[in-house]
Image (cartoon, rainbow, N blue to C red):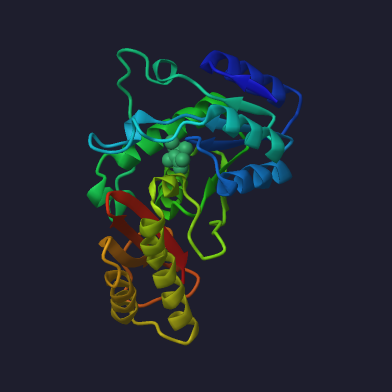
Length: 280
Ligand code: PAF
């Protein structure tokens, strides 16, 4: 597995792969890789001849008071995981190569990015779409793989890809969960044992809503009320939003459409901000 630190080098590497007729997959990450990322790399490896993983903690998607500086950085462990999962190359650029002095071009998706995360993290998706578009332009992969854990990110990236005719297949891997239901996330490592115990209420609220839908419930107010009731029982948990939306448009729905509607939850567990979701 090759590690590549410069845009010009990964461009040349990807160009050679394409010239050799290889199907190329890109798995964009911010590192601090866990089994969820590993599953995305494996998914990519099953669908492409060459998998390029990018590791870049993208400053443009963090707000001024967010965790950019303390976001976990574990390069050696990450590289081992990438290699074991079947990556052919890891692209890990420096900030100055991605956003050189004077950089001034950003991409905004203006509909799907607005609700939910867009309300409490207003500049977040502008940073995500900019870096993802840039990575896609640099690597020009046949497919790019993202995790369903970030459901709104997936919807925004799909919309950007359609709107800008990027010609890349967007593949979505399922959320991986610990045995107790907790969705894997690089931010889980910020949690103490007591906070983690309370954080489990997110996945429990999602499972409860899913059970209710399976039993025939379609009323959004009933489902959201039950989810928020479960979350409110934990003293460290502060709900930012719990909303049932269409999985593609992220618009609020009046009634659950099984397979199309998604319950998305964001909550503070003390000072740790977590998100999770479930397609109902
Ligand atoms: O999901 C992430 O880790 C990031 O938002 C992404 C897609 C790598 C862009 O920085």
